[in-house]
Length: 440
Image 1 (cartoon, rainbow, N blue to C red):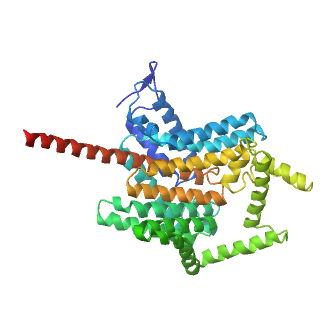
Image 2 (image 1 turned 30 degrees about the horizontal axis):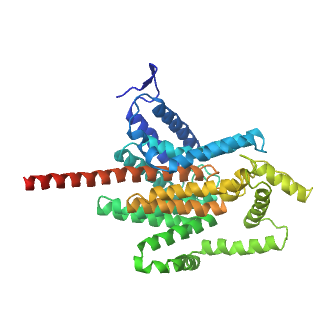
């Protein structure tokens, strides 16, 4: 046991075991209730502060932070939103609430700092995947009308969502399917190898059979297309452009829920274009997106500041029609499109910042071993696609899921790469030693 102290005062963190336990709690919590997620996030941030402030800090706690771009960009995102308080048009409580929502970005550097060895990364990954299996089994049980006492979602009986909404869980299921598929090669034995494939199939089944979330359907098609792309020999990669439409057609013809939900998009868009006054999911999004584009065009350089989307939307719509009924951040706090949301708050630079964050993740992933890199790229693709139709990083639960999943995968890939490089270095040194012996 190690007791860490600063200026002679004992700190909360008493042992590496406690640090690892908190990491595993956070990794597993994104498959559980919002209350557990919130508590685990607070504990993780407190633990991170303890580790960073303690004297004689272990070198391994900062290695990932020093050699990766993702934690730096995640921190910059939070700082930029905090600075935008200086010019925000939103009420202070809305602005601070928005910054709090984007504070989840700090989960990524926190996990990278607190996961200090490959062994700890393995534990974090196991708890993350275990939490997702627990969630999948609960959804399938609800689908077959099996009572799930811990299901707290108001959509539990109507949409088979255990803790959140069918929209969140459909996206999460698509991501989990991709992660299990790409990491199956890490299985130490044949049983776990086929178990990973089975879980991947169950997760995809949740996406296309159990849930009705259209964003989840699109994300499922995207990660499935990417998996096929990775499986194709390099000489056939040119045909990869045909994969997404072919997968879309197969899924559309094979699953009734997908066909019904995607067909509804056409009807909703036509109704919105005809200005029938009939409200729909697609129509509401199109209205939000159009007004968001106007807000960005009015303040393209610095935006309107953190938490300003509701204020700007109401202002613009009020100018168009005095009969517009303003709504608050609690009812509609975002335009259901992450890129436009950042554009309204931070201007064009905000959109570029979001692209830079995605680019940093991709850059770090490409330096890792192939299975973890492909799993991480699938998560990144799922995040980018879901951000086209929802504010997935702004929203709770699904945003926490993406930040934790990326943090755990990046930590596993980073420390796994360290081991690989260390083994390679050891082999080289051993070969040089044998060569000297032969010459002698």
